[in-house]
Image (tube, rainbow, N blue to C red; front, side, top):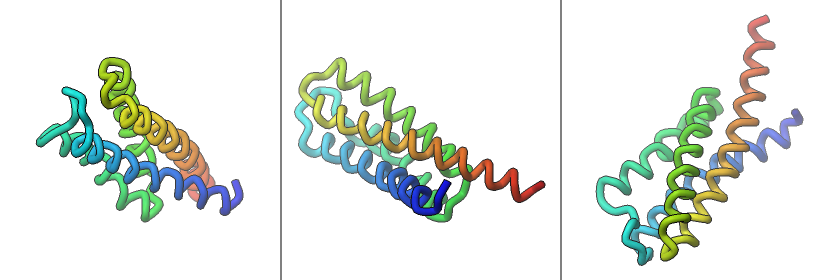
Amino acid sequence: MAPKRLRLLRGLIIAAQPLIILAYVGMALWGIGMARPQGAWLIVLILPALLSLPGMWLGRYRAFVWAALFDLFYLMIAMTDAWSSPHDRGFNLAIVVFSLMGFIAAWIQGIVLRRRSKRQTR
């Protein structure tokens, strides 16, 4: 895969995590639904995205794998909340889009990094 495409993928996944965080913070501040995240639950939702960012900036394979798993977690929660709570559906659908974008980009990035590491060990 060309380096330009890799930079684009890395930019997508690194951008998706802060966008997910912003959507959850926006829902906590301006959401009107009963199930909006507050307190410790907001920290639990934001922490995985924050923990994966430093490793992704350094280009570590494990960080991209963990980011993909975290994005599946966000996708599951946001889809459930979007289905059950019509008040904050816009925030949740934004999280669904960002988490899908992040998952696909992290998954492809992880595959590329894994292939590179296998080639280097041979």
